[in-house]
Figure (cartoon, rainbow, N blue to C red):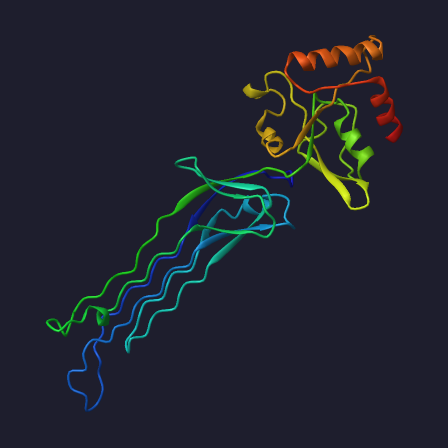
Length: 287
């Protein structure tokens, strides 16, 4: 079982509001004390917290149901019930939370340390003390707390990277990442060695660095389930730059002609691609 999980479905339920109290004041030597039922407490909220120390949704694979604390019922002597505690769910930075029924994005946790409230707790009911009037001095009813419904949410993790490496399987993406950074992805001479994205930090200069992501290889027919499929392509959504790694080890075309062909193909596709022999040799020298 892989420790990298980027797609889970969980059930969330905010706390119900506490019921209002139906009570009348009872005290020695006090006649007709009147209503004194307190209000119920509000239910707890469901909040999500973007934890920079989390990197996978593995914790939600077996723990799939989350419920905030209910509000406490009101009591006599106009005592208001305790408010339910908020439930804070920690998720990795880059997690997108969607409503399963509508597919709408409920929250995008793309900032480390941010907290988003997804479900508000139910409102507490009013006690009978709140309903006293000059014409109804002994109200014999209280308001129930607001019940909350369960909500099914889908969480998708999209890695935050500046550069994404894409290409066919076994094209050298993991080797390039391990050469430029301190990351140590699995490298072997067979297809689909990389089963989940790997991240590496590349230091350019003092105080200057960027994050590079190694995306698993994609082949023709991936949309129909060939290879590893294409679900992991969600991790490229946030990349500022995509680098297409091409294996030219078995190509008999001279390097200069290959660079011109790639440059012309980029112009044909409307992409800004400029490849020169000097750039390639300089990159090989750095590696």
